[in-house]
Length: 225
Image 1: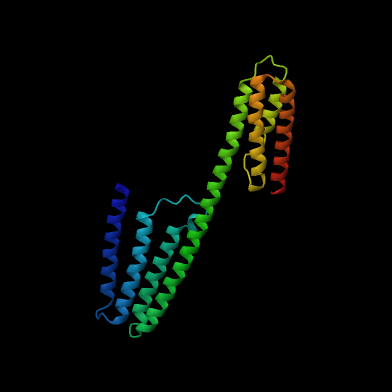
Image 2: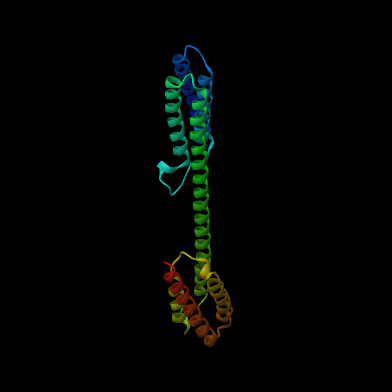
């Protein structure tokens, strides 16, 4: 909150300085002056609003292409354009209005395209996190089954091999293997029941199935690279 107040105070001071500069440029306030004045204020308020009130941008895009940076570019370009138009096109307000409208339109297109890109990045990151949680759940489930096996059990190594197959797998998932991961989860659930019943034959068969399903999952993921 204190940072926002500081930024807001700085924005107000900067806006005052901008107005001092603008009003000192034009002794007579013609239509072209007020057109530039409005567009410069629009640009500044957009930039200040994004800078102060938007959530911090944690993006994979470089800062040069962040929403804050694009708004800053727009403000700088509009400030320069407004000054040039005030100086050289003071008696042609139509040109001033058209040029600054085009600049605003280009900014809005770029800004909303960037927001769409950032939403896509967020969606992919959320999907990656969900995949990670899903596979970690499978690994933890298998680890839980492994911990229930007595050290002297004849199928101890068989379960260890199945666990190693899962733990050594690629963590990143894909929709192409979601069904396979569900099958692995179901097999581990069956394995847990057979471990409790100490059914060695079924345990060995289920561990082979888990290893085969895991190997096929890894193969499909490698094909997607």
